[in-house]
Length: 80
Image (cartoon, rainbow, N blue to C red; front, side, top):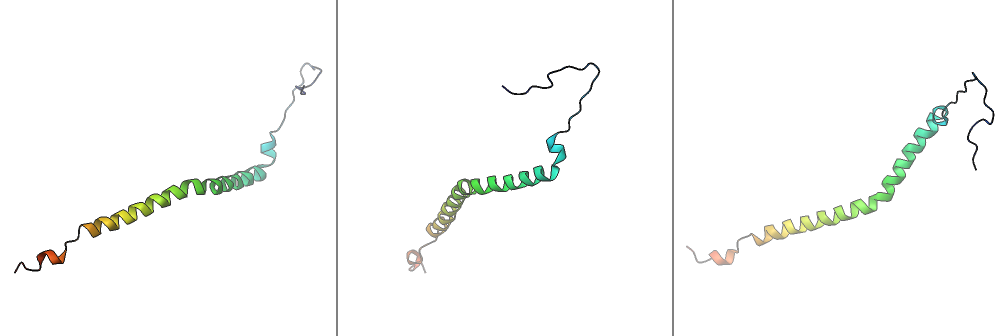
């Protein structure tokens, strides 16, 4: 299995260890930023495609609605 600590016990001995993240904060923060950019790139297609389709449908339906609400000038030609 794995190594779980010192095999011998010394009474009164205190061991200190520093976290590897504390030793390399630049690497961790750089990796975090690059990882965030990678995740955004991976999800862009799945998020932007439905939004673009929904926007186009909304845009064309608004145009069609305005066109259908226009009055036909031929209907009012003999009203004078």
